[in-house]
Picture 1 (cartoon, rainbow, N blue to C red):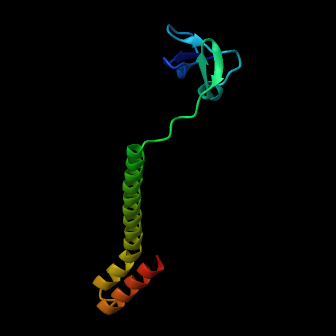
Picture 2 (cartoon, rainbow, N blue to C red):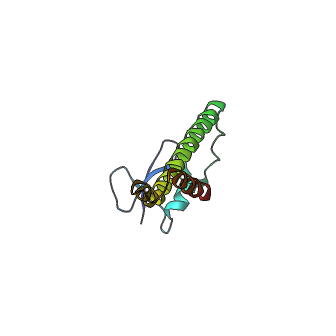
Picture 3 (cartoon, rainbow, N blue to C red):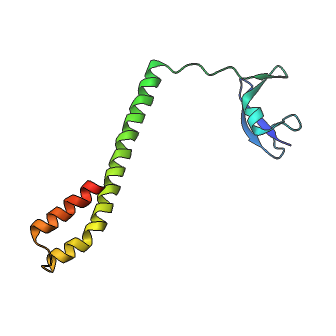
Amino acid sequence: MLYAKFTPEGIPGHIIDRPQDGYDALPKGMTVLQAAALMLVNGEWVKRPPPPPPTVEELAAMAEAQRLADIEAAAVAAAEREERIERRCIRLLIQRQLGQLTQTQFAAAVAAIRAEM
């Protein structure tokens, strides 16, 4: 059995699985998903109306948040790429420091790894 605390609009705001003060019992067999899709108005369960469309300001805020998330994701991806390149170049760097590769050979090998990734 589930119990819900309702908002003033009749929407189940918080659902728990035990009786508690301020919580009303949901109909037997009703799931959390079903309760979330409905609202209780004058003792009747009715389908919740669709939410109002976002305002221009909300749309602008969502677009800005997405833009910032895209920038952050691109920065993380670039950092991960550079880390993979560095891991692959360690052996080449050691060979360069030991004199087994010339600077030109080292630069060409690093450029080939960068082009591959």
